[in-house]
Image (cartoon, rainbow, N blue to C red; front, side):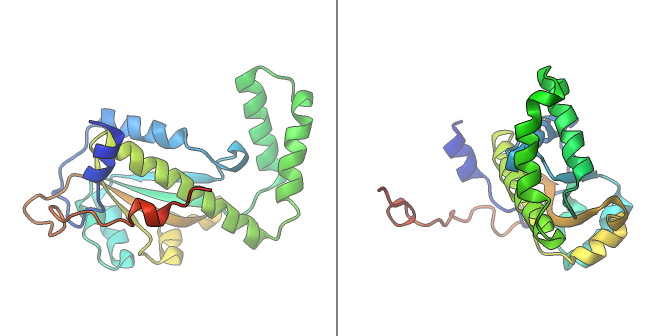
Length: 209
């Protein structure tokens, strides 16, 4: 199937059947997320892959009871950095140097661009910027899942402070931004399974200049 057919197939699943997604598919999906675009390539977030039923059950009440949290095969929590620090920039520069076989000195301008853009911002602005990068990763996740024929439900509907507490994110310098339930649609029980996809017509959405 083409990517357009796969994206037409996907929707935000309302009820999952509890089936487990194969480890091979999960690993491919996670690798696609790892390859997602982000500002400066910095990837200012961490993703928690939750399979533990007890932990998912603990999360469900602070996700307004959404059944996909416990019906899912895997529940991903996307958590953004609380701040961008010199140490995090240096760690990224070391990774770039090692990956590309370059001396750190050759990356001085690159490091300067990141530091100049990020370090002068208030922490709240840094955290908001990091959260926006999470949405890029989520977009990649949704498209990749559609290609893999994995059903998903992206979620903003939860209490971030409570989820941060459950996962101990503050101690890790992180804050939760999004969740993604991964599983298989309940074809008999999901009222949206055969609903037509509603999107803005192309001639209204796009303006060619």
